[in-house]
Structures are given as structure tokens and as C-alpha cells.
Length: 75
Length: 176
Image (cartoon, rainbow over all chains, first blue to last red):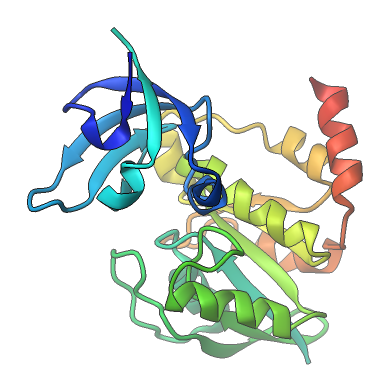
């Protein structure tokens, strides 16, 4: 099932399906690219940033960025 | 005097590295983005002296904020400088991304795989010889807080040279 990265639940894992074109280079340096496996670690309240695990490292992303990354969630 | 830029992702230990190399006392704290401006210092090599510049952390060479802008601008202004690319060995992929961008722009790079102890604790295994062969640059495991690997980093400075990305790509193809 596909959903936005910002809509993933805690502990949920998924694979990056697509990233909005203008965002691609911006998040690539943080290790987030199409095909990468992600795990949701934390979502901060009040529309704060989210924290995901990529390659064993934690990365935080603004919610507005997470809204524009589509993830194929593992069942 | 030849200039050396210390570059790497935020929070990988560049400032601790800087202090080790120069004997300075730059404030370190365990938060990304502690260095938003740059610091300069001097180091005595075995045959010549170097000016060392502690550059703010950046994820890539396409700046997204003030600190990253400073980092990218500094790199662009110091065309002839040598770059010590400090990488968190436990999060090697992101570091390699930035490091490759710097190599791509034609700089001579020494790669320091810092936080080697943390990577070992996390069971991250890195084949240093293979990295060296593919990139054709000096690659040194270091632990900045204890000083491990620093002698080798300083000795490697002489061996660093600009390498072509095309050749790197070819070598990656061979090892697949």
C-alpha cells in the first residue's frame, strides 16, 4: 500500500516509492532516495518534524517535506 | 601556505578533528549545526605548515540553509585547497554522498572515517582497502575524541590528489 511518508505510523516500515522532483537532490544527501527502506521512529506534535531510520541512522525531516515523499508500506 | 578544509555532514566530529590537528580549543557540543561560522587554525606538518579551516557541516553542496551556504561558498572560494572529508563511519552512506560531490568538483580529498569506534559497536563493517581502491584516495579510520588515526591522516595529506569521477565509476563497475 502506498502512502505519504508523513502518514506512516510508528514502527511502520516501507520503501521509498517516489519523491517530488524538486525535492530529490535536497533529501539525497540525507540518505533518502527512491528504493531505500525507511522506518518511522517519531512524529513530533503540532505538525513538527518526523524522524525516520535510513541505513541504521536517524534523520529528521520537516513535515512539509515528508508530505511530498511517497512510501510503499510493508504489510 | 597550503589550505586544508575540514568538511563533512553535521555532527560528525569536524570540530574535535580541528582541535586535534591544530591544538585549538573550539567549542564542541553534541548537536548538529554547532559550527555555523568557520574557524581557522594552523598545523605543523612534517615538511610544511598548513592552514586548517573548520567548515560548517553540510549534507550536500546544494545549500539549504545559512550554515550550508557558508560551507559551499568556502569550498568554492578555495579552489586549490585540500579537503579532509570527515565521515561518520556508522552513517557512511550520507558521508560518501557529500565526499563524492567534493571529489567531483576536482578537489584533492583525504577521507577520514571518524567515529570508527561507534561503527564497530554498531557492527558496521567497512572494507577500507576496497574503498581506497575504488576511490583512489587515502581513506583513514579515525576516532577524533581519542586521537586514533591522526598520524596517518597527517601523513596521507601528501598522497591526496584529484581523481576523476569517470574513473571511479569504471572501478565501481569492475568490482560489482
